[in-house]
Image (cartoon, rainbow, N blue to C red; front, side, top):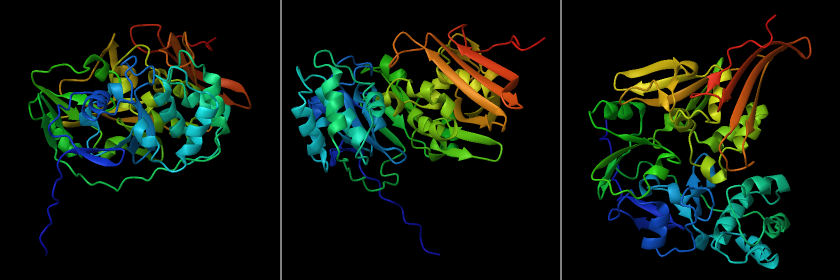
Amino acid sequence: MGKKIKRKLEEPHVLVNFEKILINKFDSNISVLNFLRNHRDLVGTKEGCSEGDCGACSILIYDKELKYSPINSCILKLGQIIGKNIITIEGVSQLKNSESLLSSLYDQGASQCGFCTPGFVIAATALKIDQPKVNEKQVHDGLSGNLCRCTGYRPIIDAILETKEKIIIPNPKKKQNVFGSKLSFGKTTFFYPRSANDLRKLLGSGKDFTPLAGGTDWNLESADQDFDKHDILFLNEIDEMKDIKIKKNSIEFGASVTLKRFENFCLKYLPTVTETINRFGSPQIRSAATIGGNIATSSPIGDLAPIFLVMGAKLHILGKKGLRKILLKDFYIGYRKNKLKSKEIIFKIELPKLGKKQKVFSWKLSKRYDQDISTISLAAKIEVEKGEKINDVILAAGGVAATPTIMKKNLFSN
């Protein structure tokens, strides 16, 4: 037998507008926004709210499942994008057919002060990737994570609608673990497990980790903090945690499946809940946020929980001793509290398949239609028979108690 060839690891790097940038001299805890502006002089990417709400910081990032998607660079750590390709507003002009979109935005007068314009161009570019024509609803949805205070949205929308050419971006070459499993930059160390076994060993190592996948919640609280010493367990290199497996009686979602991928899944298999998922944050947030993270935060107004509760979701929880399973309805124990033990993470979410007579619906009420937390959310699973007669119903709600709750009273009891 021949000797096993050991793959030579590259120095940690990112690709910025297709240029390879070594980042071993940077602190991986800095935001991607500050890395671009302060260390690469790419100042077209702006800092507005620094919370992922305004879209001025938007960039495109390559993901093999979603290809190129818009994402908020202000709530993204440098350690989260090692080995990935990102495109900034400065790189858009390098893309094939982008001139048509840029000219249309200019001709329509779609910019006044110009501060928000780079973010809108990134959002518009994401809409036009590989599709020449988009309708007005798609444009509104695609721009829902971008705010403009002076131009007004109509010229921007018209410019996108009038652009008939699709934008083509070459996909980067496939990478295969081009960097190591542990990278230290400054006072922050990222650990990159690549399998369930790697993850289990790290959880049992005795170290205190902060688990991180999308980071759209945690990164808000930790923005550029000066950690004395901090170990981050990054979960997005584990393929099994990003898989969606359709089985005979259930569907298994890896906990690191993004909300964008879950939205795409719902469009095909659960169309009655897509309006709720479509209003979850913005395209930039859904490109990063994960379903496992949304469940683990244990917020009483998390948008996914009511849907998963009525469907009878089961969590696969991984710890140093292996996997254990728990029903989601038994997971929450108080405000922002759950049954995760020390050094455990949600590994998968299992949803039973709906029966032929079962349907699921969801609703979200908020002060703003887009980019807002729920005031109250509701989901229902109904079972019908003989046409439209409802035989059974399960209701769950968020925003009515300290935890997302299954409504106990049977509304259809005699």
